[in-house]
Image 1 (tube, helix red, strand yellow):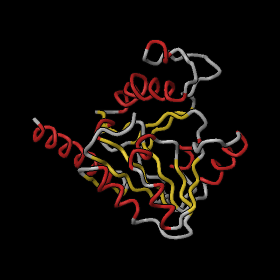
Image 2 (cartoon, helix red, strand yellow):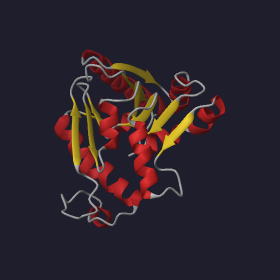
Image 3 (cartoon, helix red, strand yellow):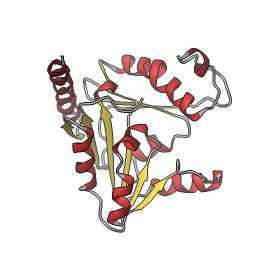
Image 4 (tube, rainbow, N blue to C red):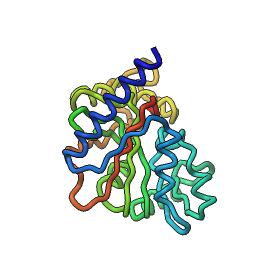
Length: 213
């Protein structure tokens, strides 16, 4: 069974990579998150400003401490004990970082990145600003098309993230999006990247593991 799962992950992952390349993204497949982390660290040098887009996927790679050892400056608005003003300032600095790391809520078999944000800082930085953007997605986020991607976000990504953030929206009670009108709603900015933005340097790293929400 393990070999079958490995085959399936690799087959879908590499298929998505080829589709992303057709849409002008740089894209690469790794079997493990350990390999992906090593690849990402290869982009970091002393003095670099590295932005983190509030991603459980990126957090699971455990690269922040290694980047600090290299001498990079970490821009993480999710760090503990930050005031609202400090969080906002870090979000702004991420837009001009040397490297911005994030995940995508979904990636389609035909090579599109589909996301929903609350503040909008992640999709803004993915699109324009940082010198280099690396988007890491586990195979659990692969969807057949845009409609399936938004359904995945409604069923999995949104309720799990609202529960993680403890915002108390209706989806934290029933486990799926209700398209609520709550002031605390985190589903506010919808983005589909059908092609790589023309002057943004983006690499999509597809990993043959389940990562994040």
